[in-house]
Amino acid sequence: MAAQTDASAETAMRRAEKHFKTRAAPHPNPRFRKRVPARPSLVALPACCLPVLDLSGPSRRPTPSSPRRDGGGVDASMDGGGGLGREGEEEEVDEVEAAGWWEPGEGGVVLVSQLGKRSTYRPEDEAMPVVVLKDGRHGFVVAHGCVLVPRYLPPAAQLALLRTSLADYTRAPSNLDTHYDVPPSPSLFALALDAPHTPVRPRHADLGPAELARLRAGERSGQKGRRTIDVDPDSVGRPVAERTEAEGASTQPATAPAPSTRVGEKRADDLLRELRWTNLGLFYNWTHKAYDLSLPTPPFPPELAILCKEAVRAVPWEQVLSDSTGAQWVDDYEPETGIVNFYQLGDTLMAHVDRSELDPSRPLVSISLGHAAILLLGTSSRADPPRPLVLRSGDVLIMSGPGRTAYHGVPRILEGTLPAHFAPDDADDKAMRGAKSFIASARININARQVFPPGHARAA
Image 1 (cartoon, one colour):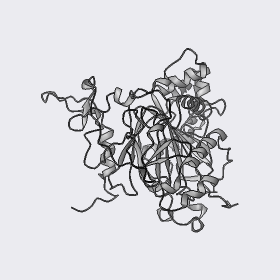
Image 2: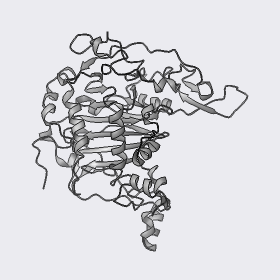
Image 3: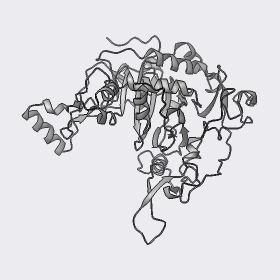
Image 4: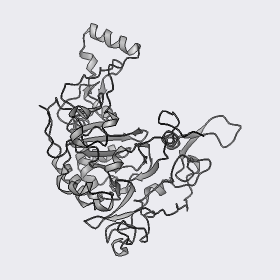
């Protein structure tokens, strides 16, 4: 049988995505045609998918015998007695297992009505290379150039970043700007918290009759008022000196997508639940899939920059990459842009490759908050079986080198997996109560990138 190509609608990546998106299954009684609620099994997987790796769960972290990149074993004295955590940490509850996600299932699905029993399933240990970070933590090389550091952020740091993500990172630019006239100040979160009933008008409400007619005609004809310009795939992996700024960034003003005439006025608190992404630092234009340098560039949040740089500096890159590429990142990695993704429980992110930076090998630092999720991490081809990873709150995944050209996506947020430290507390102030209320049905992912390599002179 001929190998599948990326042009196939049913590549291995696509079939894996379909598996994890499962939300219903045939009724167990064949006499009933109605489908019943179901979840995808993390155990019974389609052949197109590698086994699930859950490296940050307290009962699922590899044992101290796991191989390390330097050839030694993991020092059990640093394990803290409950997995690869810091010494003295208390054993935490495994939210993923407690929510029934590790049930074996039949036919690749687990009926929601059968989730009451506790699974005793344990996946077979795999030879997952382990590296010891410079601060004593452990990371796992889950793919070439990709390092997962479980529980990099302790609970207190997760709560602080949750608060900042909503209080400070819910300002424009965001996915809402095209269709709604969102006030620039305060942040949308602050507006929803302090004045939840405040009406937010759609942009089309201020258009004249002629412009409205033009937009509606375009909507009826299927025109979306946008075009997609992707980065030249042939430029990925070429030396930076041979790449041009036009291959990853544009100095020309981007054409804004047209506002929809089908949206209506909404309350601030309702609109907050429709927030899906915001931009930090250099503006990434999703229509053109390039960085828009024609706009003023706000500074990248300094506290977040420090967090990302510390994570990159802590990794022993000589044990992760086969060459010396990563040695310079310890000194010159500087995040310039970031995307904050706000997932509701039913949201997904299709497999894609991030390749708009001039040096696409430089680290992308990804931080998870809230509910756990499945990340499908593949290769540079959708046809290759992807590796499903369980990402939990506090985990940090750093993608670099060849790993930056790997297709990756989030086909499932794992319902019921919110860690206990996000539960309401009597000591919470108003902002923290609002933040915890939001994350109770959500997941936040922050990823930071360096667009321009050191010494690069931007076009005038």
